[in-house]
Image (tube, rainbow, N blue to C red; front, side):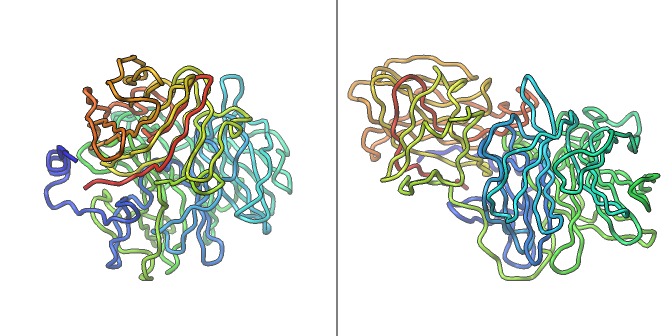
Length: 516
């Protein structure tokens, strides 16, 4: 495969030629654990925004915003905060775009509070389960229009949700209903007016009771926009009812220069590690790779003599000592799929599915049968998965009937995607979220192998009739602008399969491989 590498131009220019490299795991995917007692962020590469995590015995569990991807609220497990394995999704019913979850364990039951929105409604929901692996309940609507719920138990033993904008509401004892009026309890921390941020956006409150204080860790500055906007700030109180005192060390975390490796760092959860050291898990955009979305970052903190804490990881461009010197564990999951299982693989998510979307698929025996929907990727709910590598290729065998168009994409949202599809009669090129029909070369029928290579935003497409001799598609694309600051939505650019129309398509032997 012919490749034009941009590693020297990008990595050398931004970070210097001595910047460390990530080790490679499953399918060559990036992994954080360097195998020598240190790690290099991100701990979970790819789109893992708004991380919320708990410690449960010797295990850690974490989930993220899933937005329009369903099943949503994927739960991950780790024993060292560095190496993570996927478990189960907690949300199957589409209640809208899912923002900023809060995973908690209370009285031997697990809860996830989250905001979800549709064009018609915005609210906070909760799902709950007796076991972290489910089954999880159907979502319960709490009737709150705020975003970013943060769960807390006060010194009075009562449960509360802290909300965006410094508001709070009391919960019922079972945590499944609100029990009182919304009240304003905190005005936030005001940064200097000359700082370059996206907006004030006081959000993401996380409450930790530690020692004599309740600590509220929250985000300000806007989650995207300028790279210096998002930040972590802290306030504390001796009572859950306040008053709240701002930390003299605010902001605890902030990207201070566009030359740093990680941009828009914020939305932190505090957690005690397996060796009694303390950490913050938060998200950030990788310099030069907005398309990967907000990735999960881990930074050590130290408690100060005056009862506050400070971050000690710098700009996260260099390796850090691991929370524990235990032997490296498996990390991540395969993204390739032979479709031999009778269930869709754990990596797959429908984009903005209808309630009965799973009725469109049948999987097993080496094939994924996907019934068509809509007329294009913009309205057919493609199947996507999160990729966290700077360069990779995906290839798959596709067979179409006479009434469907199917293909392989890089999909950001209904507004923005790129790739190649085909029908029984023609090729369809996708670029800028638009379609262009092209004549199909002689000798190509209803069965075709497609390969999509994304080499640091340069997209090259190949097709083959036998998976041995590949023909390069005439058009190459540059997709570095396919991200939130251009199209909104808070998504990432994800490999995707689609089938549009009245017929159906079969997909076989999907292969993913990261490139150097």
